[in-house]
Image (cartoon, rainbow, N blue to C red; front, side):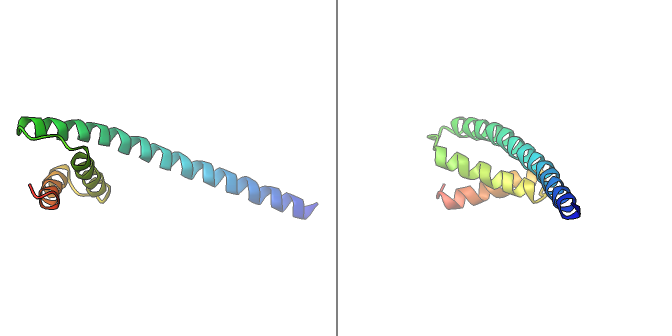
Length: 93
């Protein structure tokens, strides 16, 4: 009886911890999706403003870079600047 109570407590604790952790991960994914959506639209606008042809791969690369930098606690302005430079070099612009 004592072993079954201990097993029940261990399983319950495991489930609760996983639920808490999955909620955080899920909210991070939703936040990143929202940021990426706005980023892609902004990149599309900037490309059209510069009279260049829109390339989906280029836009995704810029936005992935931006999200990675923001996730690493870099400022908005520094993230944009670094990602523009990185993408210009990567895509020979």
